[in-house]
Length: 159
Image 1 (cartoon, one colour):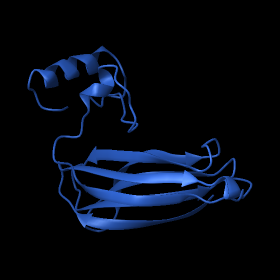
Image 2 (cartoon, helix red, strand yellow):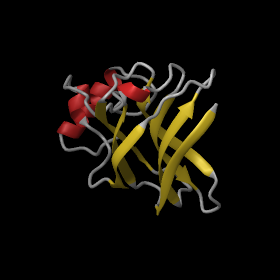
Image 3 (cartoon, helix red, strand yellow):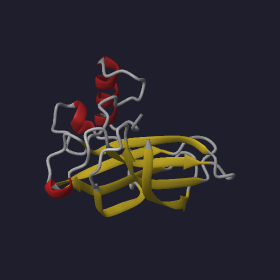
């Protein structure tokens, strides 16, 4: 695998909610190869610049329609030990070294003004920002997510 991309770091603290967005696409005239893909990531790093964990949203892959730019959103809450939040736009060239280009535009990144959760997703609404439907972040999409949603609607904090 070959990787190329860009990133920018921001001072961060554990417990802070962060959100990044970008428009991403590939052109028909230089469509990304079948084994290639691109992601928009948030990396959480400690004071020694060591990676703690990351959140990732798929931006483009070999099946992405050409000449279409979709908005991608990645979000998360900084874990214990975080000193830096990093937004990363990354293009990965997979096995076979397929050609093609990925384009990122209008990248934004910053602290979220509210807890990072979207009850509309669990409530059956559209999911245009590709938010994880595991609302309570327990690794499953199940009744526990519905219970957490009801708690938020009743005025409770986001899980």
